[in-house]
Length: 248
Image 1 (cartoon, rainbow, N blue to C red):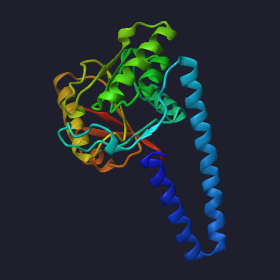
Image 2: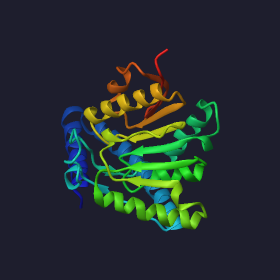
Image 3: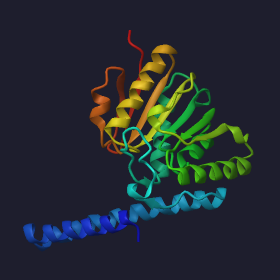
Image 4: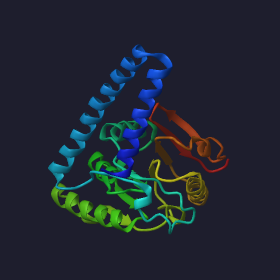
């Protein structure tokens, strides 16, 4: 059992015990009902991911705790654990991007910082983005992402250079000077996130173009809300979509 899973189970048991002591049996029953519903949803999400992996011959499974990953090399040392993003949520983000952009997704480069094993990159190419670039600091995850990308592109019959995997610190990444869709699944803390947005703003100022940022699991939403070059496009319960704009 992984450290992350053990901590999750321990936390749920603690919450259940607190609910029982504080509010009695009725509250505990409600809590158990919500937990059961969450379990059903997670099972569906996991089945869909497993189906994707099986169909494309790739491996994106697993949860890896932050302490088991090589994040110390990063400038801010604030990388988080690895966990696969739900496919249906990623597809919702793609639909929002398609309706917000004034041009087809095929004009965009999809960039995933903290790309893990590369699932969003493969989903982006399946959706019709022009190219995809993943940035991952952990060498093991970067190697797995490259392997997945090679297998996926071969089976999909698309050029193998349409998905690029870079092993580097996200805070040092130079964005390509073409329409950009940046994807962030809460991969790191406020320090790296702020540096990434600063680089995005500098890039858009230097080369004006459409630049969107999809932020899933918005733990550090305040970094976006406080940045002068960032405009909120859409906010949902799970994720937010932003535009990075050059100063007028």
